[in-house]
Image (cartoon, one colour):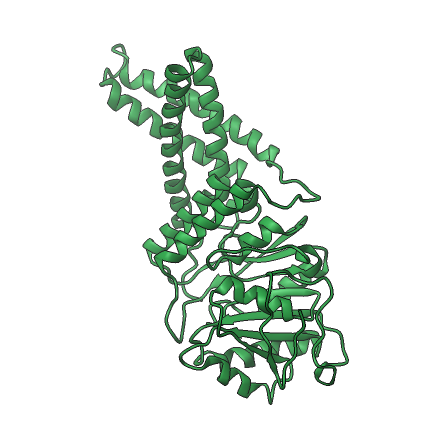
Length: 417
């Protein structure tokens, strides 16, 4: 596969979606003399209004940080608003800008890979072309790679991250997609706090020569699943609302996300990492100790509320109240002790209340799972009832810990910035 271009326009690579170890040659007379550190691919569709401001912001930032050792590659899918023509016009004044105009293929993920195939940098990056990804985070991502990370992800769910003006429905869909990802493919999705991020950088050597087969628009899943990613770094960023153009988020993209996870899992071809993913045991032990205190609270309150010698309330009402008090007890201790380092970065009663509500919902899901497992092991497989209950409690403890680690102590409510 060779690439040639008459001006600042890149020919579209063909064949398998595979990143070469060594950058492909372009026309020698157009190549800069300096090596390229960063190749940033920006997939576009109907982004003509955003191109001028985006190119100026990116070049102002990267010129100061990297000089001529970077390139911007806009990959446009034959936009009706002629985004590629607008971008080509800017190449006269911005020599680091290149444009790829695709007419036969469609899709954000394949656009990113085609751009990386034509790229010359040792660090391959991607960001949206709608100014929803703040450019200043680029330098932190580059620094993370230069300090040894194979993958650096801009995340909405770590310190400094968030979303500016998302509706409750969109927040629910985003969180729901992450939960499903953790259930379907925990060893991949669980490696990052924001698996649906479209703003990241990866070392070329970590994905070179791997045949990629993405589905939908979440290319990060493919990189995590197929690449040789040992060390991951995350940088917080606030996802901004679109200023120009229309949002491209649709129900179909969420469906493709789930299908992509199933494809990665069913093929059984997830890359082996030099550093295996491990359960954070110290947190897990603390979580278990807190859980035992919750059992004591639950039993004590059930006695106080339901025993005829005490208040003598009905058993069902007493159990509901006792369980909720135990959940609140567990939340307060986990917020202070198990996840205290994270909670200290998310201060304020509103954020604490949101964490409590998430904790409640996850514990409710754990209760349902407990009942299902108990009945399955006892009624279907014939386990002893007490052994079945013990196994169900262990499984639910893992469920509650894992989802709370990934969801309850991750907030995205930042307000406008």
